[in-house]
Length: 292
Image (cartoon, rainbow, N blue to C red):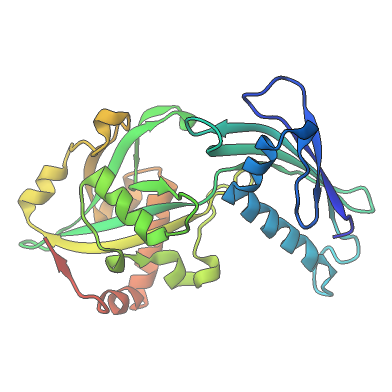
């Protein structure tokens, strides 16, 4: 990068109205604002922020390649303003960070850069095969999603990562909590990785405003019709603890027209494409068909 340091304006959503200004050395080392190390250290320990900054600076460094479209007037990251921080419960466990960047080049061109950082998440396509009829069903969750103005969003079971990058483990955990289904980690197929490789395994649902990447997993289980019926309208394991999640079951062949959920539609498309190329059958054969 052309600059040796990046200026930061830090303002916690829970702090006073005044802004603190600190400097982030390219290392990066964040200097404490007015002697207070709490906010700066918490921010640098927020995995999504570190990942985002690493990815951005790496991408900026590639502009000097002869084939890069910006090689004649490369862009520089001049500043990052942290506009707000939302915490999960008590500090210092960060949930979301909203920031704004100033990225310009020598010609005065500007790249818009407002972002919400929340990190990665996982979604799970579970195909339940009726062991008598062979019919294929998919459990979906029904839950409030205030950001899109609904109390009844129909979507794939999903959950945020905890910073450990244990994708399959988190997927299995969410299935247990939301659907009551016990799935072994080695029964989960990473659809994105199988289709596009490990470097592109995370799908990007909203690149214009959010850093989120979603790893989509799938698995198949043969179960009895009575078990499938039991899932209809079932409450999630944490329903009484505030997670108002219930289940709905749809046929796999109808999934593409049953929900607006990006995760469900992307998982369906990946599954269909991989199945058409014979990659799903090969992957599942490595661990065999499960029964319950």
